[in-house]
Length: 139
Length: 261
Image 1 (cartoon, rainbow over the protein chains, first blue to last red):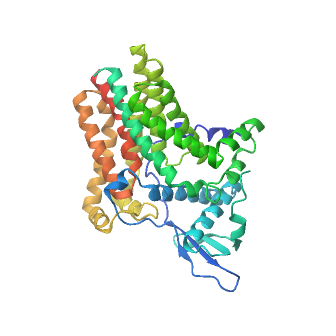
Image 2 (cartoon, each protein chain N blue to C red):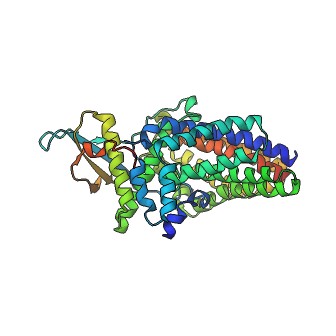
Image 3 (cartoon, rainbow over the protein chains, first blue to last red):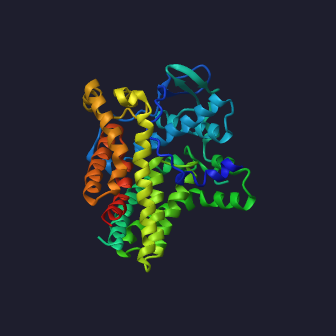
């Protein structure tokens, strides 16, 4: 309960601890397909473009999306390590995978994702149906 | 420089920073819309244990159409700040909408830049609210100056406790960490040269730990703020942290005014 209320004030409870923890290299892969028999290759997602343009100093939406997605994955990894994955985190990570798959293969009907640290699998999802991640309207 | 002038410069800088932040969120609409990553249906799970009425209100506030309206009004408020100096309603809305965005992303969307934006907006809102009482304005500006100083000093303190930062190893490791590995190849190669990485890292630690000296005089303050701005430009070049440049810049006038008085 306290955790839920703290979330409302987290933005004002900054610890100002930047780059304090050198984390292990975490990578996120997705693969898509039509059925169990025809999976495509694993594709690494959330890769930034290695470039800088002066305009990005003002508008860098893609990079900031990547930071937010990485932050979500870090939270998911912390929860996995603690042995208690919050259902919201799990849903959001599945959404993230579906969102990335849609960008890579818009015609995909199924997908699967993998989260790895130092090239070792930390989490491998079961095959998921793309249809489950289509809009169902507002709650 | 008067407190009012410092607050005016700070609010224009804040509006500039928040304008670009908001535009980025509008561009990222597919990522938070009905088929996006941070879709409302799944976020509602976070509020299961809140009172029913609070849960219902957040559910409405975070509907894509309502959240879109929040962003557009926030963008309009940024423009309006240029026309209406120290308006408590505009600054209050910038603060509130920063908090709404942070909650929608389960704490913050962009970490520290959201936090310094929220503190600057809160400090300026308080200053605008009591602008008829100049001595009370000090409180709002002081709040920003304290957070700004803490942001550098504490960041330096945690780095100083990590041996890998003193050797330059941490900088090279962060630059290779997925997500932060966005530097152009020639920049990366140039920075991670061991002697250079060490020089930059030690320089950053000393600069961050020395930051509280900015309170001592306007000259020291101006010098440290100039270094800080270059430091943020470097962070943009190396890590792509563009929001940090403008969000921190908006807090500088408050500290400079404190140092001048």
